[in-house]
Length: 175
Picture 1 (cartoon, one colour):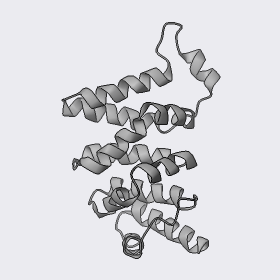
Picture 2 (cartoon, helix red, strand yellow):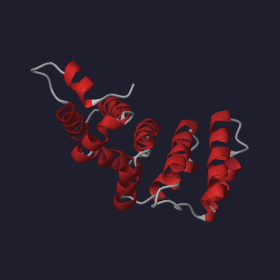
Picture 3 (cartoon, one colour):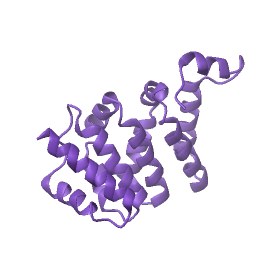
């Protein structure tokens, strides 16, 4: 459910932790934890916070997007990649986040995740590209990546096939 600032304030006790501070604590926990389970859980929580646009500014301010990009650039674990891709997907509706990704990571490591066998990761990446492609930072795919997405139209996973078809339809409408 999307929130407003007044709804957040009503739900936060007088002595409670505000949203920005809580997100900052989660980022610190992710960065300082040596436990795989803790990192997984924190990354999942951060991806869930990325669902609500009210959090976008906080997420940029405290480095959540940086954590997602770091995971995509350095991790090979499917679960961590899935949570990071989910978070980036949730954030890519916002042009400021798309611009931030472009300026701080580029699209190459994100697009390379289309080569994963995990259909949830692939679906998140295609959805991210659907959101990002129309932004000024769009036109981010090379011909090989477009062909890969075209191949996904034939995927047995209907979610991936449908997302690929939507993306390709959107791209053809832009050219």
